[in-house]
Structure formats: structure tokens, C-alpha cells
Length: 62
Image (cartoon, rainbow, N blue to C red; front, top):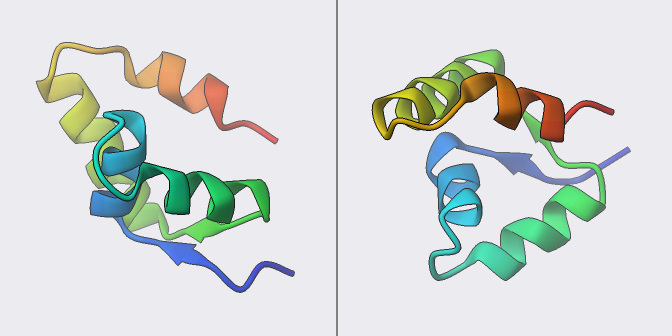
């Protein structure tokens, strides 16, 4: 079981390759969790930026 829980800002930093992205990548590789509320926020922001929420969802499917 992972000991990491991501919030929306952490995952968005990872997706946008911002500072801290490598820390988030490490957490993801260890099976980090994200709440449905934070996941919805990420997908909403992705859509606001003109990117595809479906593509992001597919990339994170287990």
C-alpha cells in the first residue's frame, strides 16, 4: 500500500513539469493515491488549458 496521497496541485505540477515534478513522479511510481475530488479538479484544469481530460485519464489507468 502506498504511503502517498496527492492533491490536485501536486499532480498538475507533475503534468506541467513544474518544480517538484520528480517528487510527484516518485510518489506515482510507488502507487500514490488521489481523491476523486482532487482528480476532478485536475481533469477540470486540464480541460481549461485546452488539453484532453480523456488522454490524461487513459495515461493513469492501472
